[in-house]
Image (cartoon, rainbow, N blue to C red):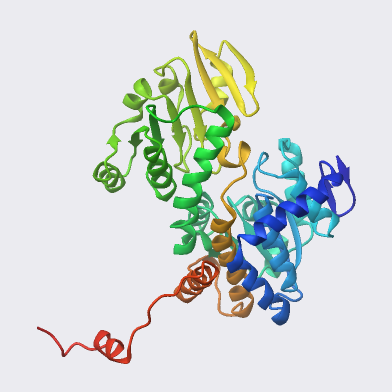
Length: 420
């Protein structure tokens, strides 16, 4: 490990390669680069200390540079022990960004790094999964009075935040970046769909076609994965607890059944629910020899690996990010320690997708700073105008022009007199 007062990374000599990867990401993140150019001129985050707990990828590095360009003093740690790209972490550290992260963090290091970020005393927090916010509320409540607001990047984090809000435990405003259409209808569907399949393929090199591919959860992430697995000619099975989402899956042409029944026929299992023990021991005991288990939900609790560790006859590593468990004479293969397979075994979402999500983060931070006197503690919906602005920026980056309403059309849409 290489370390100083402002960073701890695996190998600082990887910085040169990290910069190349960041440059490659920037080429595909035109919408965010437009915001960065404006931030450099206007400095809307001048004097603001931002504490970040995100996946330290090349795309996140572009976000960090955008926030810094806007005047922010940024400190970052990882929100998952396996999601750091070590060359990118080295590049950020060598460029003067406060960063504590490496791929394969121990639990002790994970929380030590989280504390390092918190101890910079941020005025704004940027989270993926709510660990930063949760840690501040439980162990550093004295810092809350100086925190303007925060932001949450993912569905799991929003679930946790709403639970905090319900219990009157959330003490500062948190921008629901995940709920922007340009985030959850793009990042979650398009990004998770592609990057999850990428992670499974990198870990296994298995043929998807012809397999029974079980997707647990048919929210935006599950929809994306199911669609792409189907596109690769898998027989997709969906398990759900929500009646309407189950109906959607059935109407989209997928088989829908209970996990207990899917466990008997599935070849590949993928959890994307945000809940725990979605695949439990009773399901694993029913599975075929050779079944593959993966997760793309934020935390490593969706597959009950801790119980599998206790009950398995043996365990060994077969390939990077693939572990074989022998259970009652059958082999089960768990990918990426049941953590986010798209980041543990692959590189996460494509840069273009993350440009939209990180436009949301950048503009949410600007909005919060500009409106800090008007915001109350709780989960804050981001104005639709910001969503529309992100869409416009992405269309421009793609070289796409769209129509505008004529004055006649505007009048027609605003009136009720003209009918049949």
